[in-house]
Length: 228
Image (cartoon, rainbow, N blue to C red):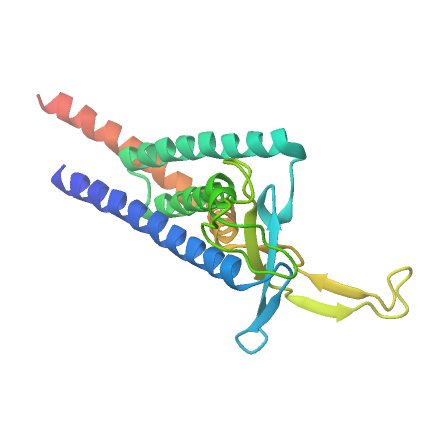
């Protein structure tokens, strides 16, 4: 029992550390890009391995959008509600004795959601508008570029794993450029993607552990009652 309590405490601390580190890196890079790059500016990184390319989007991950002012507000409210549900789910996992890896992966999803929520809630209040000719200023004298809930999400990671041209013999596409992966994203998007896809890929191992743990707990309770 004592070992279980200690494990749960360590998992809670690990959740806090995971969320804090992801948010710190995500917000640091976003603020650096926002205050040092003009909109559309690019810079090659790590011997041209990937590119920092500053863009903004008013909507979802990887540049997807949900149209209009009310779509933007609805999306932000949905993210806040979803984050609350994820927090509840994390503590449920800890209580049920889930594998630490499962808890960390869900914490990555939470951190990613919170990272983009911060952009939507506060960036419009505290930054001036980014343009193709000028860098945004933090806390400008005449106020930010948008009210709360209407801030744009900062994206900057551009990682085309394949950048080539279609062979001339390919119908319609022949000779045109082919890139994969084209969407520009951020660290928060990456955290969400890593969490979701890893859970999907290893769902049997991760969820079987929870089921086994519950079965073991029930068996322990039965043994305890029988002993009494």
